[in-house]
Image 1 (cartoon, helix red, strand yellow):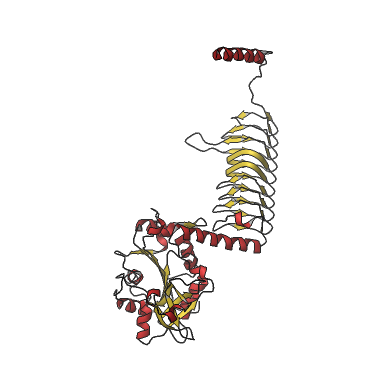
Image 2: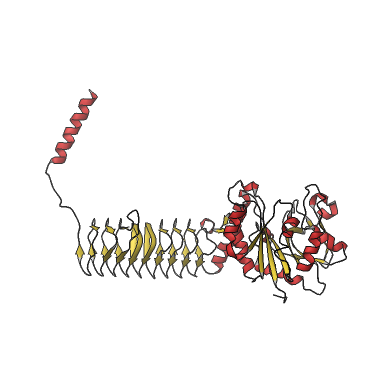
Length: 454
């Protein structure tokens, strides 16, 4: 960073989020499988703040539990505006002599670089008292305006309802994000008043106070208005998801990933796809998925917590659950489910199979309809299948059980004891044939049915 001073981040997360109509706090709603506040905190943590303060209020325990030891939480009660919210951090930051970065908990996409730019601007030669992050949306709507001089220093901040026509023509809007030195910030906050229609203490007013004092205040502008988008409704949550997914798809394709129908593929925040991966339509990646080069994820597959090796093929209609590992060149086909299972190099499970708590050796072949019976209602048990073993269709492997290398399990077997390497295990009841029995049965039933109709 372009400053030797440490900084503290103050994240405002006290609002009710009533427009979401949810029992879950608004900053805990997920975007790409990660909560709004976790997206924001990850960007903050990349800059190594000296302190992180989260201001909580409504449904505070939910936020406190999510934040955990990563930040100190302070309570805003009652909630009397954004200026009042930041002021609640005063005691927590007593004696702190660094800079303060003020962020909104419902705006998850602010970049670390933008935060750094806001902090660095405080240490320019003109030493602004407050730095405001501005943005220029396609439609300024009713955002508050940042009125600036030619050198991007601020003349004043004005709410839309209080702006005249000339001020409303200004396209630079207030994002609500600011930075200031701690020694300046809390003095300015102490001077706020709530003489307005809402009876609240507004954070942007500290800029006007500083300007009246003859202090310089400055604006930093983000090039991407979407970066400062807040999430206050289900519609805005959906828009944020769409925004994030569109960006991720573009990044993936730029990195050498083929997406057959990009708009139908959904990533998680931590999805990692190597170059030369091909993803067919209608694929969903949950959290914790890594896919190596040359792999193909076929249509309508769902992956979560899975590792897919080089040159593997998944699906169509496959489900890889947490702990699924596919080693180089392995294959799962349609309607195959894996959970906490490893499929060895070159091994295949082509269709209609469940592999749970299992270890499958290299080159093994798992026939259609095979199930590893891993749960007795109380505990989970492991199935081990050796290299090059052949498991016939419609087999049930009742764990704990081990099938040796090169062994064969005949189709339709229910195997509850270990099978030695190179052995054949066939578990079938004796087939009984009764000549003519079916014909006699059909004749009898037809006569009975006819009699009932009379």
